[in-house]
Image 1: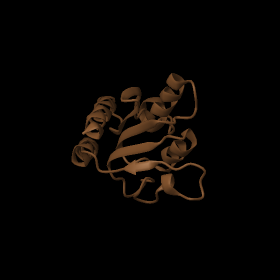
Image 2: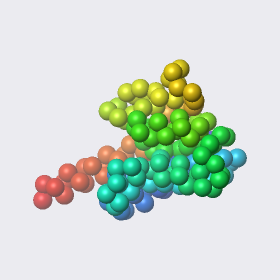
Image 3: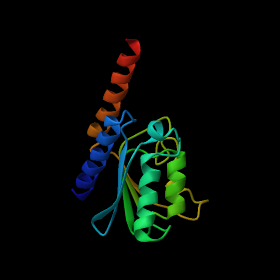
Image 4: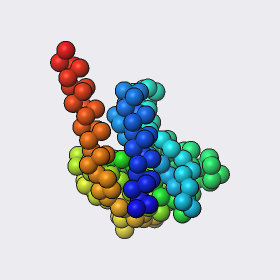
Length: 153
């Protein structure tokens, strides 16, 4: 039940991204049952491919914890993290990642690969997938449907 509560908070961030005409992906990071960071996609707004929801939230969490190590933290994100974000999760030493919808083309927490479980890496993180998956998927599908319709006009 706790995972659903925090994933709904990540969905709120995704809706903020959608309102900014960004791909609606949202993220929160939790430590000791408290949200310590939030993020949503800002790639289009900033014209910067590094401004994924996960990286924005990791940066904020590190500032709030005054450490680059996010031990004891769980990330909740509406879409399975990509390779870049999964790499940042390894480097930030996060304990757990919970995501909603799978990304079968770019996901690196179980779909294309699972970076968090690679024995070659110095840090591993637990992955929980499919939490309120349908809601997380619908917001992305609706966004791209609306985008296609706008381009047709």
